[in-house]
Length: 380
Image (cartoon, rainbow, N blue to C red; front, side, top):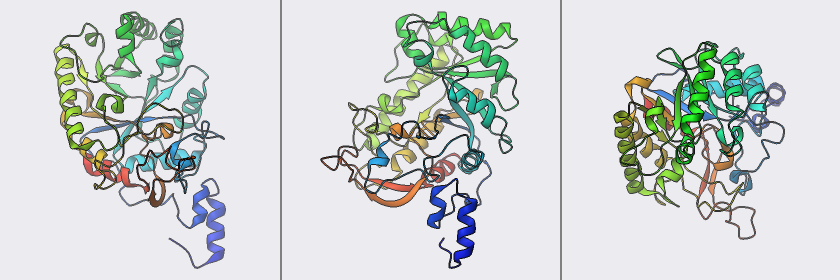
């Protein structure tokens, strides 16, 4: 809201200097009154605590649009207490009760941000945290596992006893990226045993959620039973859609999710359904065709996310607190984020030579808090 009182606006801008967009007259710290969680589901987002001065390299599709569509908080430093407070406020507004935080090893930026800035934050309150163990970085692309035991020893000592760390049936929960690759390589049992044994030495019986689900399930699995629960981070790859996904692709994806759930239950594991608002990683790499945030060219923005949520909740297990995953809160490089963006008109024009190399001819809107609203409505 624009103010007609210049002095007051100047004061407000100085107070919110951490947020570059506050001086445009829009106060990102003010939110609708729905800022308390109210959901029968455990709504989880993948959270990336890796943004600092250069915004983790600053390469993301929305920055290339004309005009750019930047985060509502600007290109922030996620260690800033005001940024963390706003992320927490927005999360509660969207019924999000768990951040599954990307973790790249002891003393990594992510580790330090979590331990010294997020977990001690005075607004953390009842928000839960769990770690997402990044196997690609911690196992040298799945070729060496000597870091696994020391990593778990560090996690057990520094995280598992924190009152905000997620537990299921009293057991601290660890999410593990790309267990399906470990399964395919025949090394999953070795890695899981190292994790469990090290945790036991520290007095913990860990609950491991594997990123095991992708595409269509096999008729039988020798590895799912090694895990406590399974889910999938990569919704985009599993769905296999390009451009406008359409309702048929959403239906096929959740039919596969239902089959994975049946297989998981047969093997004694829980299932956690997954959803995403869209995908476009042209800011960082080539080779993946974008998926619009609209189901069809004529549909409204956010219709893909709304359609996916409507089915995802049907496959949430009681044993996990009816948990469902959203990819992601703030993975800006792949445009899966639901974190608010500066509000603005839709555009497909970008700064490439062709004018559409980043957008791939798809429209993108400055969506504001749209996805928080969709998530809250879909999980009430």
